[in-house]
Image 1: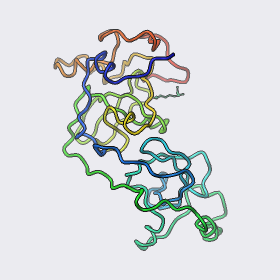
Image 2: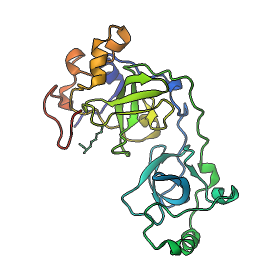
Image 3: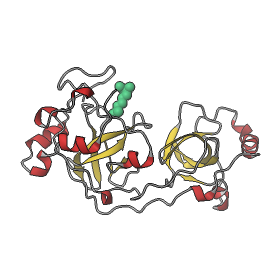
Image 4: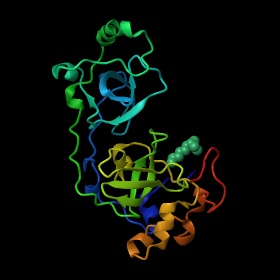
Length: 265
Ligand code: MLY
């Protein structure tokens, strides 16, 4: 059987530390997810954030919902935390004097939108207001440090949450690097992004945490880490050569090969 990824072992192997909880815009105790597949709610259209649309819960994963905008295709699903400010109960938009909009890429003629909306909401199972949790406050200031470990959404595959390392810090932003993926999925985000989580998040929420990739990181950020004299940053090395041996079960071949379709940065 394949050995499961374990943060305690991994932090030891990589001689690194987890980013403290208070660095994140996430609740200390993850919110409970009471939603059920098929329930409808209002969501900001990720491709057109000023418009509020009707969405259906297509799946449940940990504290997140897989959502699809009604009238849209099945190629643009997106994931939101149950305490995201991007989602709200049906009726919220109208209460605020707004109008529900067709999603970008509405599959029917625009003129059929009012009737479509009526039919969509008629008899719909609406997610109760109590299921929507309050978004946690923004952490200030940015307290992430280079080398700290975290769990982060792979923005190219947003259903995946993966082990990651802070590769750089600049003002309110952090550079999220994915362990073992040679930089191909790395991104900058604000320190209060809802896409980054403390170590242990997935095990608390029941979301699936991906194992690290098989490639040694040779990103610019890790080069920067290597040249840094401070202890904290030396402890953050991702390279298996420089840290404790990695269990053979995970099949790591340092410095060798890359998965198909990966363009290393
Ligand atoms: N099949 C995809 C998945 C890559 C996922 C990378 N994440 C986990 C950082 C690929 O190999 O491109």
